[in-house]
Amino acid sequence: MQLHSFFNSSTSYRVRIALALKGLAYDTLPVNIRIGEHRATDYVANVNPSASVPALIDGEFSLGQSLAILDYLDRKYPEPRLIPLEPERRARVLELATAISCDIHPINNLRVLRYLETELKATPQQKTQWYRHWVAEGMAAVERLLERSNEGPWCFGAQPTLADVCLVPQMANALRMDCSLGAYKRSLAVYEHASQHAAFVAAQPQHQPDYVA
Image 1 (cartoon, rainbow, N blue to C red):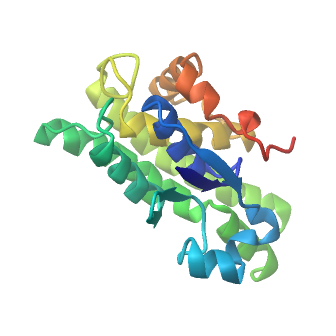
Image 2: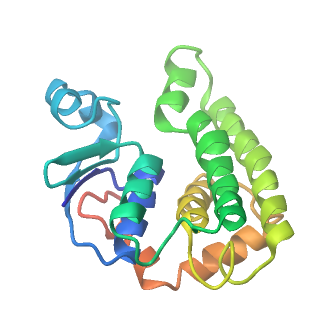
């Protein structure tokens, strides 16, 4: 198994967590999105038509988009299961995971921030204001979802789920961007708990072969 990944990509981070939780061995193939390697002709044609990271290669099968990869991994390698089978619990996990992956991440990823600077001529201060605004907006919703469940050390009980796999990279990025997170006590508690778990530690950006300080 191979994972085309960038150390600081939160979507790649999600997949690394899932692979570590499931104990699946893989080779990391770094793709430096800062210099546009994800847009290289060969990469788009032969690896990921979405021109993004991550991309997973499992034998003859290749797949992009982190949520699709996570669902694939959960179906093919179901232990430990990240997306519950019971309908209501599954829905709650997906509700929180998509609040992060659909509402926060897309408007704060690298290509959006670069467009703000290069095309709309936003200043660095305006770009930071944009980032922090959408983190605050999105994390307030995530916190309300977590307060409603209030089930345990993880987002939904005693074991990590897809919700934790999405939350932890989002929190890490927000902390890296110096966002104020003190109001999100449940989110911080989950993040701190995950920071002690071997699989989450192994997936951290600073432990990747392409890490640059």
